[in-house]
Image (tube, rainbow, N blue to C red):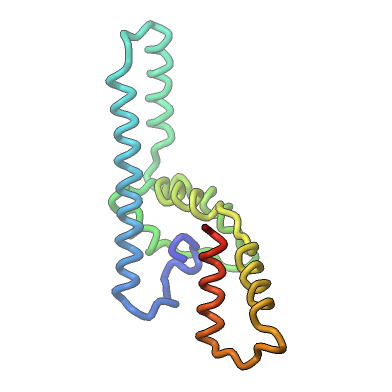
Length: 164
């Protein structure tokens, strides 16, 4: 929910501690991502061989493009989660979350990468359909007197036995 711009206030969570827990987890993920980037960059710079003239020209162009791309609207990694919390969500419907993160990737680079990774996982209803099918076999006309707890236990055992 935190990665959805319209639901990031987490109003559905009643406990303030849970909200702070979500924020701290987001900060931890951003910090972890930033450390991985630093490790990759330091690994590249240490393993570089003596540079030829052409390589120097490419690296100079890369440096210039970095300067050109860096703008004032880019948020510092430590502050990215707080800035996202304070950022006003867009108004109106329909709303495409992945498109919003793509458009705001410069403003929130680390959160955008995390959102792309998490939100691009396709939702699947296959597991829930299997559970309903199994429940249909368990609860039949002859077994209408089963208690809900017993049905839950049977379904739990069925799903765990099927996995092994």
